[in-house]
Length: 455
Image 1 (tube, rainbow, N blue to C red):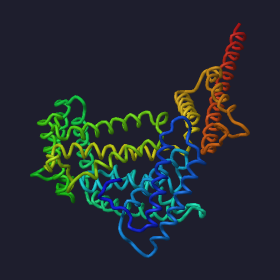
Image 2: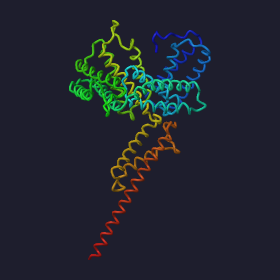
Image 3: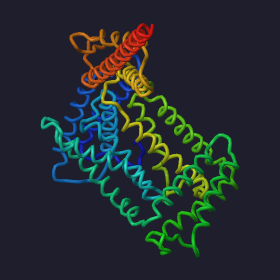
Image 4: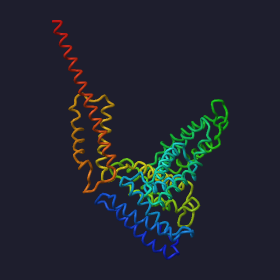
């Protein structure tokens, strides 16, 4: 962002705007780092309005001319990235600003999938769904929303869709039975790359994957995959090439055993650390993730990604990294971008301040559903702990609202709806238990009458 390769604005008015946007970015970073209190909607919206005002001034200054990108554009992008993540943090996930950061990550993912030409239909399904959802968000944007950001996000979504369509066309050309084989090969390749980046390398694990590859290879006839009619399906060359790449990669991984040259070890260690941290967040997301934390991961990954020269990294002497290092580090970057994307689309439409209550209700709902699916309860008494917890949460409301420090955080409707679902499940279980008890009592009574009649 601050690299000398990105020039300063030449226009004095743009320089004034740059100074203000840099101050805005610093305020956003300070707010992001403050863990002493929850992020408040009013603080985020104030910073958002101030940023949009600078954008309005910038559009007036640049009207009718295009001098190319300068440092102001980079700083503005940082402001929008942060604001986008703040909108997720306060639970406003269905508004155009929240989509900005997600489009950046999707664009990175699509660029990498295109570059590597290693992707499956499943990779594209989620991205397709997300882009459609974002198109709907932008299309239904509030008319009072400043048009600039909605237009920008819409344009970025369309660019992503264009890249996505090219990838989908490649997958759709594969005829049966190649799609399933292609999916399997991609899975094996990624599993080998994962094994290659574990703290302790396991040759046995990689050897198992190589055995699976050989089994797939043995199904070919004269070097070609064939369908049930014995014909070579469309896409055979692409899948056969992928199989060869997988076999070569298996041999390279077994030979290198996870050893990275000293000159690239610092970068490798940092990328492994980023990947590991993101995987931990994926496990504990509901309780530990503040979406704004993803900004730091994004910036680190972008820095490494943009440091490549002609697609590869170079050492201090300008010598390119060997193929093994290049592929290993690219795998880590792509895996990390994928985790950032996954964490973003999993963001709940509830403010950070309400997440503790929301997560407790999610857990309660899950428990009640499991009880229901396992046959219910034998006595209403068994529901006592659930009822107590639900009532304690319900009693937190003030005039029907969940208040936090005098504020009414975003996501009230979602939390209230979830609370109502839990009460409904609790009631259904209680009703079923009471009916079961009544039926048992009637059965016992009938048995007693029958015994008396015999006597």
